[in-house]
Image 1 (cartoon, rainbow, N blue to C red):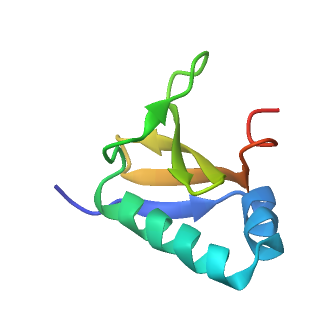
Image 2 (cartoon, rainbow, N blue to C red):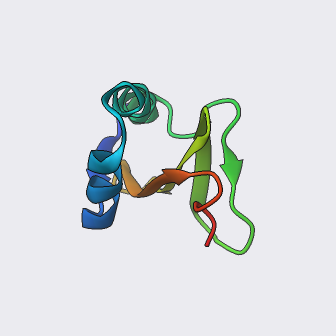
Length: 86
C-alpha cells in the first residue's frame, strides 16, 4: 500500500504552533505515522461524520479525514481533549 500524503488546514497548523515543543514533536511523530497507516490501532471514527477520525496523543486529539481515492490524510485540528469536539 502506498504512503498517504498529509495536508494541514490552516487552523490545524495554528493549533500545532501553539503547543509546547515536546508535545509538538509527539504529535508530529503520530501524524507522520498516519502517512503510513491512516487508520492505526486505537483510532476512532467520529460519530456523525462519514470520513473523520481521531487519534489520541496523551491529552491531545488529532482530528483528520482520510481520502482513500487520492491517498490524502487531511489534518483538521490538533487540540486538547477538552476542546477537541466543540
